[in-house]
Amino acid sequence: MNIDFKDFLRKYLISIGEDPNREGLLDTPQRVEDAYKFLFKGYNQNVEEVINGALFKSEASEMIIVKNIELYSMCEHHILPFFGKCHIGYVPEEQFIGLSKIARIVDIFARRLQIQERLTKEIGETIMKYTNAKGVGVVIEAQHLCMMMRGVEKQNSVMTTSYNNGVFRKDPRTRAEFMSLIDK
Image (cartoon, rainbow, N blue to C red):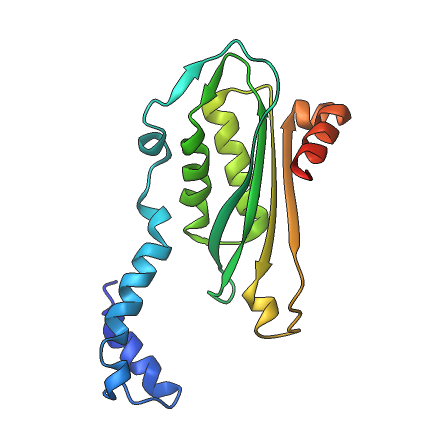
């Protein structure tokens, strides 16, 4: 089905009581279309292409952590933003992944309609798949505008989700080390 998004937005503006022909709104349908293409660019990205072979042999066997990765996403229930930070830890087996690729993996999945629970799992499973790590831990802390701007209107609420597999699930000490290091 082919829908003219700009025409849809003009009709939407009328439905909320606006005049799409007023000066400030004349270019709004195009700006919204451009913004949404950017916000949902994760649908047009491929993990393998983004990683682009940035996997390197490693003799390291200690935990690698990247924390405070900013993320911006849109909730699939209200198409309103949620934003926060993502912390990722993994224990390499024989290889590690390029640092910037970890942040890019977060963005691939965050730049889609999402729920935080699935986003957390998709990131963890992807890191595990491409690194063949001994284990992966992911924690996301995010604020959801669907809860802050509407509904219960709780301004200081933060949702925390986690994903643990391999040694992060099997060994409570590994999980505890990860949690303590991301809290610093």
